[in-house]
Picture 1 (cartoon, each protein chain N blue to C red):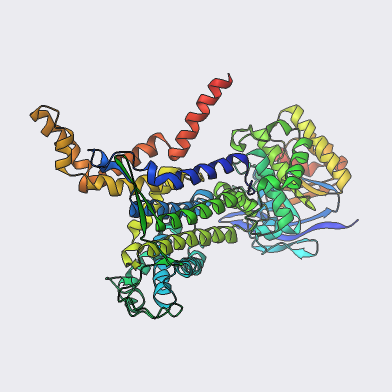
Picture 2 (cartoon, chains in turn yellow, purple):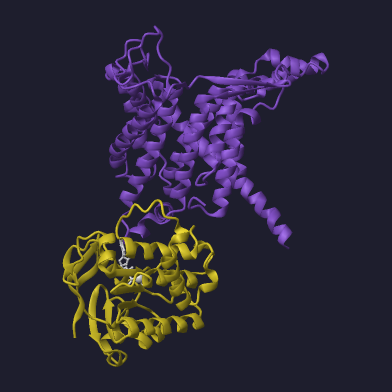
Length: 252
Length: 387
Ligand SMILES: Nc1ncnc2c1ncn2[C@@H]1O[C@H](COP(=O)(O)OP(=O)(O)OP(=O)(O)O)[C@@H](O)[C@H]1O
Ligand SMILES: [Mg+2]
């Protein structure tokens, strides 16, 4: 099976804390790969090194034949990597539909385009694409709502729409269902499953909700204190003593 | 229509009407009446309304959309003015090359300053622009004297080359004109007790303002405009969305610099004199006030803000104690002098006090500026009706 993302020897130190300790990861193309681990294990930090938010002290992150380390955030996104953040990162004072049209425009027009004359009203294709994605996520009745006024779960779904509308090759999801109701969580699982199956999109999902993890993941990596301690198929994860120790034993 | 939505088109028509009819609308009080003092329908004042309107509309493309607050835009107004005067001196007394060159020179100048200043954001960006503008001001008043005329300023002379114009035989310095129509020419129309003045220069400014305003609406409603709003809303998120925010903000900076240059060019087209004080920080601050007072990020707000501030500056500053006494003359003596004493600090040389008070009230009670205020009142009424 082809490898979509290859992480090799990534280290990151914050002062006295070794947040990432020689992390290695192989993510298969077209699969959903879950990263789990206790709070503070370094999961979000690892994603930060993928998207240019943090520069690791050493190591490489190869995607599509290119090393993502050292590239700028907008370049990484244009290569085809989109992320849903753990704390919602949205355009708070713009409307929901605008929040989704912006990444759609970025996908179509690239890093910069002086498109200052055509009215937004006439960008019907972009608008339709945004509406379609929002419909998939059950948000079609909130198009004109100001993004900041939405619930936390809805902000998550909005961010997912922002990622999906770009038709990325790799979608990074940092706790996408946190703050969602059970029903919305289940709906989100369905949507992600459907997209994974129909588009062959590669996804990395960080989750604490094991229901979500085991519904979606085809492979799971367990991260504890900055190191991948286990990488295996879901059915082998639950009974693994190392995993139980990482969760129950805590720091030692 | 014209690529605008219905509402935007109506707004453009409204501005067209107001601007075209301003010589009448701004002179509501009969000549010689005690309130004639408050008339504003004079060519030079009305020209200033429009010129500063253009300046503020452009400034708002940067500040209103991206949130980057420049404290140095007067430098571009000044650079545009100098470029304009040089065109009037060297090329022709026709104002078109002057206005075009002002815009271009300011554009190049703002590209340079914007490129450097936009390496930082927030207060550091503001300070950088302020520093550049003050540097320009200091240079223009001293070392650059051969180009700027130093402290006395730059003006047209009788023996300027004006290579495109024929030999000047009149013995007078020619006045800026548009294909023979001098900017200072006016037609005065007495209408009963009223007197209306229709001035060539004013209508040239009006034409330019309408175009500048139209372009601004197009920019506001375009994908580019939306990216600028996204810069203001969450700059960092935008970069994780595949957009490089830097060229967007730089483009906005240059566009607003060109608007400032255009305003400077119109200034010298109306009165061919450019001084370095035009670049001073107070002038940069003024356009910030205009934009905030009218409504940051609204299309129409800055024009209104510019009008109000220029009105205060010119009308309130002319009110003196004699006038106050005549207004309060109907009161008993003691009360009359009391009222004069109370109002005195707010008018004449104290007009800044009235402006400052109004500005404070607007900021506290109308966070969206005057347009924001009107908008929310309108919405409240509209909602009540809908229920
Ligand atoms: N920018 C930073 N500067 C200093 N320390 C940081 C920074 N980012 C993360 N850390 C620290 O690194 C460790 C790992 O944090 P990280 O956010 O990656 O954990 P996580 O696995 O995502 O946890 P959670 O499940 O709670 O989201 C934590 O101890 C955190 O405090
Ligand atoms: Mg995290």
